[in-house]
Image 1 (cartoon, one colour):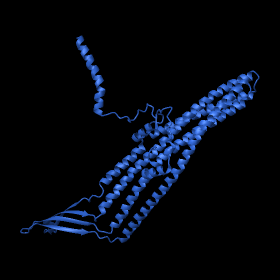
Image 2 (cartoon, helix red, strand yellow):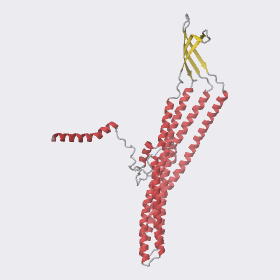
Image 3 (cartoon, one colour):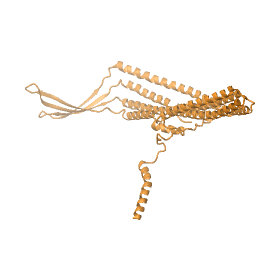
Image 4 (tube, helix red, strand yellow):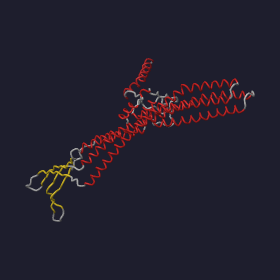
Length: 434
């Protein structure tokens, strides 16, 4: 009996160990980019949020379905119309009551319409161009979503750093308030010094509350982009994306990449091709379509043989004004799309140049602030605190030093955020990451 329990124990243990393996083998290899549960924090990196958006963003899903529909539509374009089967009862005599009586001839006919040479190829080309436009629209939607995610992620990082810096300043102000209250109790300072220090600390408390609410709003924005609940957890301290080296931000090189990969330009190029096919198709409307039919004739009269009949029919394109109007319409549409394409090209050229200059400016401002202004401001604040502690400096000097440090910190975060936004806009313009 003990041996049987021992065997059952090891059998159950083995099944428990093998069940995950069997389940994995049944379901296939694991996917690293599987959607996270709503209770698990996301956002450790921008790449993780972009992967989630590709799977879960509803706007991207709608664009993908439209692209699939356009692909399916292109696969069925350019085919022949369905043939028609016709059954004809001919030569029906009257009976003595004047009603239809005896049927003399029956005809079975199969008819097929054949568009004029070249029409089907143009229809197929137009559908393929529209399909390509839908796929480029999907890429454009993905690029726009990526821009929004990168911008919101940089804003989320800015708020967290601002909260950390505000907490540091609050600790400094608490120390200053203690010094001011001690000096006031000893008769070494006025009540105004203690009141001003306390008011500055209260302002920092208000700032911390405001930043906390702003963090919640940005979290909701990020969750909406990846189709999660607004209050779903996001990683508290995200990692800021590193800026590319200045050598990789050459305007001529990036402009070539934008011309080759920008999804909005590609979408307009596909739309231009579709408009060209449609304009050529309107010119083909002057040529008639051909209908051919082949039929079987069955005679019910005695002594008469059965036979066949064939027919060729042409539609006569006599509605000239309608065809001229269609040609003018398609020509105007083609010129309009070409004008949009040229305008978009100019916009991308100017936006790329402007964004590169803005990125360069933000990078230089951030470097100067971080390497020069912030260290000097910290030294000045430390000296002011020491002087106030020893009685050689007044409280107003410490408050000025705190305000100066806070202003430089804000300038640094603003420049870093600006650089991240400009980087995301450049990647949006060139249609790829740097």
